[in-house]
Image (cartoon, rainbow, N blue to C red; front, side, top):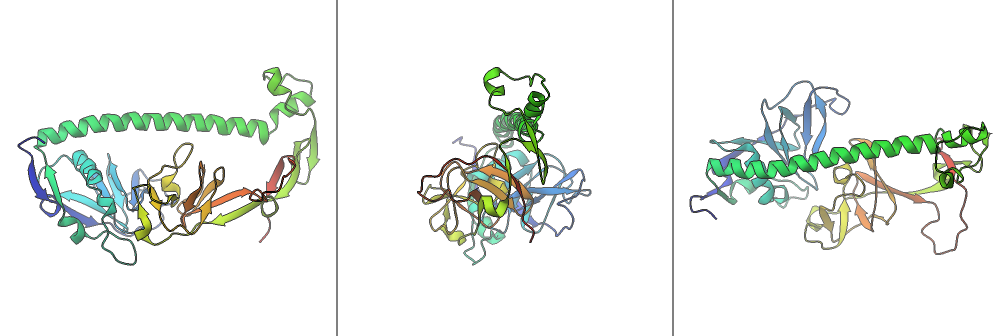
Amino acid sequence: MAGDWCSSTWDKEISLEYGKPLRGYDDAQGRYRVFGANGPIGWTSKPLVQEPGAILGRKGAYRGVQFSRDPFFVIDTAYYVVPKHELDMRWLYYAMIQYKLGEVDDGSPIPSTTRAAVYVLDLDVPPLDEQRAIANILGTLDVKIELNRRMNETFEAMVRALFKSWFVDFDPVRAKSEGRDPGLPKHIADLFPDRIVDSELGEISEGWHVGSVIDEFDLTMGQSPPGDTYNEAGEGLPFYQGRSDFSFRFPNRRVYCTAPTRFAKAGDTLISVRAPVGDINMASEECAIGRVAAAIHKSGSRTNASLAPSPPCVTRCCPS
């Protein structure tokens, strides 16, 4: 460590300010990001903080650290950070991650981070020019990560478009049924039938059948264990609370749980069931799921019986 770094405590460097309640942010189309305990949760038309800044989760099983490059809003499950003297805000964000402020817990039954618990903790503060140099290096890496994430989103959109063309609109089947070239390599085109048939849901590919979600799949709703059973040391099962853990292909391993209560198996589809509903991912391994997630798998796939493969189906939701 450089000799001119100084030892300090968080109460000497920052103030943690409470966010404010906000309604309607889920569906808002405003220009300002809304942050909660787990990260971005929506948009609004008026910011609470008028400049870039750092956000620290205050309540919940997972309380993350976030950074906004633009003015933003923070709801009452999180804090926003106000420096008490000149500090590089980007460096401050990385320091909060390094010192694991998102894991500071006051020991109450509801997992939460209090200002008093954070303020007494020690930290080392470099000179301002070193803060800026550190933030620049780490920020450059973050930009690269963000670019890769956007590329992944583009690939994901291409996959969705291809899936819709092949298995929702049945374009290759329609082309073959009409004597047209489906525009696919022969070994792929040969996999598709050449006939469209009617069903109660409309036209579908020959060989498909109509089913219902309740008949075709089993659903496991998540449940969150006590906050003191979580860790980042790899003890227990990977724990996925909800959409904040979802990445491009498989969820991000951020937290483990030593006392899981609800499980997903490798290959299960994971669905966010709260804030917002409907984001999906896939479990790459056995894992625990929290109350913001659910897992679905093919009905009967948990048995050891040898099951003959069944034809694909077009599912529908059953009436309640």
